Structure formats: structure tokens, C-alpha cells
Image: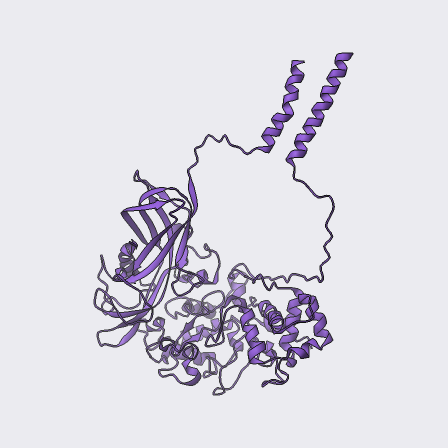
Length: 249
Length: 353
């Protein structure tokens, strides 16, 4: 009789297991927000960057204008209160302030809620995935391809414009970066970044003049106006670019 | 005996309960199929785009169908499109001939060259100066309404079109937009990817040493062609001043004529180089008769102006690439590998009349 009493309980047990969610996962879950947006803006020595205006000067006093800017941003990490850097889920994202379809923002996924004291990212694409065909094959991504005969992968940045040379003539410049070793990682520390249901974005600012200074003073009239595939120049520029980002105050 | 009956009852009850628990956990499925009788039935058009091409995106408001493409092709070839308008007697195909990769040679000095219709779905900029921007539906609407000034009533009165519009869009009271959407579907079907270079890219053919030399010059800083003519479409679809002129008047002002922005003087859309050997003469105004002349322009003929593309100003090459005769011949040889004759002879794209 006892046996049948137990059997009587069996269906309700099956019913219970079959119809309820698993709620007894012993692993503590970290509360996250699904999307955390990084907004990029661009300045030249602190002033908002305007395209096609001959109003800027490099630290080497080269007057210049910006006509085109595109770059990939990737590899985001956040520094938590214990000093650990947490890799955040994100894919390389093309940034283009002149094309609304590409835009100036990237989205980090499933970011743990908390307060962080630093953020790092990269202008460019991490070495392990910088090969032709890695990124989704959109026309925009493919237009950033770095041709296979010179190494493959992608341009990390196309920064183009005109500058006034020592003879006061206006000439074009192309600061193109690509090839592994020329990524520009940026680390911003000693700040406070809140990630919560009510704090879901962060504004980063790129100062274009940082590409021309610190640690290397870059003068178009000396170093040259064309960096593409010139390893020594791409290295100089990429090392300068390690300080190009800051958090917008 | 009594106990046995009790046990049997309990067993029966158990069975019922188990069945109930199973039933309660399954989705409710309506056993009665809902009959759907569409007013018309279209067949999705299948694209066979190679995997090395960019993602092929089709707007949700104009899915490509076999019926829509057939209708669009008929409109493309039909001179009724211009009947009663300033271009009477012409159809799209009057200027976009298949044997010329849906382009047509026009003499220098008579205006813009006809741009080839090839792999159009990947661009947002149309015509040499970008007069129209957007989707294929936008350029098709421009062609129907503004360029040809088509009289829709002529098509509504035509029983063949009535039938074809019904099959494609489920209506017979179509308008200019419907006509444009059908033409856009035809545009979207015009894809070329069977050149010798494609076979090489796919590992199915070898380039000759001269062609391979040209490929390498094209894709390195030696020629630096790749920035504006990037693979696999052989165009970045953007606007550039490639040094044709140092002053700009008439159509030579290029994108400036659309934007009024002085920074756009002399900028033109990079045309695709696919089938370039079939689309002479070259440049927006047809000033170069041959590919050799084109290469010579980049080699020694670049003219400076404030809007000259920065790519053209690499130190040491400000006035041209300074290529050897063999290097120039190699580039031309490579450009000829981009010819896809299966595209220019494919009956699927030919006139239905």
C-alpha cells in the first residue's frame, strides 16, 4: 500500500519537474545589463572636430584639415574595484563620423553591473582576428581591407586630409594604419564608470592631434604625409595613438 | 480480491495522472489547419552570390521574386517607358547594352559616359556625381519618374503588363513606384562574378605571370589602385578626385554640381573595374579611349588641385606612379582578367522582346 502511495505522488513530481524552470543552479549569477553603449566623438586639441575646415594645427605647427576618418575600435576591458581587468563581450566596430549608417558608437554586451575604475580598448583589430574575411562581409568592412599581398587583414584607421607644407602649399596627407603591431591600445585609469540599469553608456573622446605627438613628434614636412605600408611611420603613429582616447567629462 | 480491485483502480488513476501531466506540458496545437489562399503567388528569386562577395541585403519592402525580376527586365527593355516624354523611343537598354556590360560607348564631349549596370546592389551612390543616393528603388524611381517621365497609363492599358504586375505585386492599379520597384528587382539580379579573376580568387584558374604582376601592382603601394577599387567589387563606391583636371567646369566639376561644396570639386564616384575592358571610353567624360591611356594618366598625367585625393600624393609619386612599360602592361593585362563574358551573354539578362 505504501508503494502505491508513493506511486500516487510520482505524476505530480513529474509534472513539477517538467513544467518549472530550473531555479536551483548553485552558480551565483552576476547581474548584468544587456547593452552598454560607447559613444565616440572627435576633437582637435579639445575643440570639436569639423570636417573640411582648414582651422587646425598639428603639434608640429602643420596647418591642416580633416577630410576623412574611419577606424575600428575593439577589445574592450573594464577594471573592477579589485583591480582586475574584465574582458567585455564586443566585436570590432567600424567608426565613421561622416556616415550615419556606420556611426560613432559601439555596443558592449552583457556588462556586469558595478562601478569600474578604468576602461581599455584598441584602435584597430586584435592580432588573433586580424585576417582577411574575419569580420562580417559588409561593404564598409570590406572597403577597410588591407590587401593580402601586403599582409591581409584590415586597415585599422584611415585618417586623411590636407596640410600646408613648408612652401605654404596645401597637400594631401593619409595617415593609414594596418598590419599587426600597429594597433593602438588605449587605457584610461583612475576614473569612475558606473554600469547599471540607469547608467548604460559612456562617452569617449578621440583627440586627433594625439596621433601627431607623445611620444613621437610627427611633422608632415619631416616624417612625411603618407604612412600606408611604411612600417616605421605606422609604428610612430600607432604609438602616439595610444593616448588618443579620454572619457568625456 | 477486493485489494486487487483497489490496486487496479490505483493503477488506472496513475495512468490518467501521468497522461494529464504530459498533456499539460505540451503546447496546444490547433488541429484545424487554417486555409491560406494568397491572392497571388510569387517565387523567391535565388541569388548565387559567391561567398567572398559582401553580404547581399535586400530591402524588406521589395523582396526579389522571379515574377518581379521578369517584369523589371521587360520594363528595362521597353521603349514605352519613354513614350510621350523627352526621351521618346528609348529604354534603359538603349544606353545600357548587355554586350557592353550594360554600358554604352558615347563620344568624348557629349556628356557623361554611361555607367555599367553591374553588381549594383552594393552601392548607395548612383551616377558619376552621386545625383541620386539611397537604395536601388530610389535610383529606379528617379529613372521612371524624372529621367524617362514614364506615362503609367500606357502600361495600365497593356494586358501583358496588367498580368505581369498582378503576378509580381498582386495588383493591376500599379503606379510609378511599382514600376520602379520592379526595375529595382531587375537591377538587383544583374550580378557578375565569373571573370577569370574570380576563378583565380576561387582557386580554379591561374593568372599568367604578367597578369599576376599586374595583380600585385594593383594591390600594393606600387600602383595603389586598391584604395578606390577594392575587392571584390573593384569599387569603393565613394567619391574621389583622381587628378583629371586642375580647374573644374561643367560636368568636370563632378560632385560639386550636386552639393555646391567646394571640397567636392572634381570628385567622381569610383566606377567598378569589373568588365572594364568592355566599357571604353573611360572616365566620366570618356576622355581616354583605351586602358593603356588610363594607366598612363595615373602614371604621368595626374593634375594637382586642392581637392586631389590624398592617396594620389604619396611622396615621390605626386605626379604619377612612374611605372615601367612592363608594369603598365601588367596592369592592363590584369584589368582584362576582370572580364566576365558569361554576364554579357547570359540570356537571363537579355531582351524579352
